[in-house]
Amino acid sequence: MQFTPPPLDFAPCTRRQWLALAAGAGAMGQVAAGALALPARALVFPRDHGSHPGLHTEWWYLTGHAQAAGRLWGFQVTFFRSRVDATQGLQSAFAAKQLLFAHAALTDVQGQRLHHDQRIARAGFGVAQASEADTAVRLRDWSLARTAPPSISSHTGSRYAARVEGDGFGLDLQCDTHQPPLLQGRQGLSRKGPEATQASYYYSQPQLAVSGAIMLNGRRMAIESGTSESGASTNRAWLDHEWSDALMHPEAVGWDWIGMNLNDGSALTAFRLRRADGSALWAGGSFRSAGQRTQVFADNTVAFVAQRHWSSPSSGARYPVQWQVETPAGQFGVRALVDNQELDSSGSTGAIYWEGLSELRDGAGAVIGRGYLEMTGYKKPLRL
Image 1: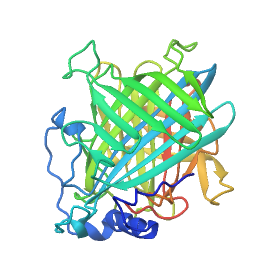
Image 2 (image 1 turned 90 degrees about the horizontal axis):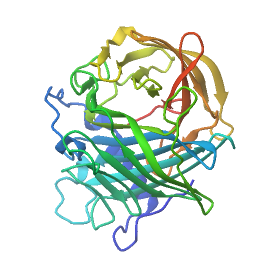
Image 3 (image 1 turned 180 degrees about the horizontal axis):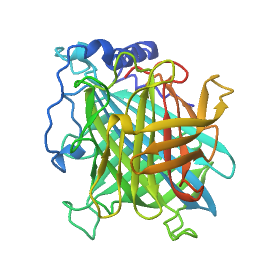
């Protein structure tokens, strides 16, 4: 993984100072100890597609799968924003008031290999920015931006363009919505712990149709349109946008999360926050059939049961790469398509986590969808 330091003319900080700033921005357990509960409110679009710099932490998470050169690929493009409280009162234009991080990954299912890269910079000076008006996040030559698709109104649909030039790989993606935003939790206010302060504003854009191209080792591969044997599109993505002041309870060391596009057009979200002993501190999620209302899962109705583990030769962390996930919408199996999809972001956010393309199975073992599984806090406790 490659770390690209900020340009010296804009950022005279050393790498160690940058990482210290990032750690300070992310130490929510201390920074937001006196945080108030987020008020329930209606999310307003397109404004809430944009950045919310008044809150401490925010991310835009695009994950998906596509067929190119006759092969299946998984991809991840993530932009994070962290507010640095210690610098908010400084008058200098060089004060790092907001930090932007970005992670990108490409999973080669056939080759059983993960390619990944990362970026970090302070907001400003044309180097990095996150618009408050709409999704328009950029960190040097990496970007994620939302517009209205040519054929529909901006009030009813979105097109997300993601462009990444990483270390040996690249992504040039267009992802179009065919469903309205899925408001997670209580109409977009998602509880993440036993205390009311542990919550986020959170919505998803499931079942995105993917087009564009994937680059690997200088070869550009067009994404191929088509459907699987079940009739589902071979190219689908999922976008999460979440922002908060305090997500994690002090006892939480990390989380397990799935966002799955089902072949029939449904969308499944499930997550749990874990204690150090592996027990669930809090859990939740949702299920929405195409064209139907969202079913929101209560805390005590979701369970993750590990069925197979994989140990990373790099970090030594041991991850469950096959799960049984029990929800009010049914019991599902989740299986990683590549075991080694661990990402080491020590050069940016500091976390070592597992994020990878996985398949979803029903109770009878039939594959009914694909999506991404994320697992954090297995190497060391996660601190946002």
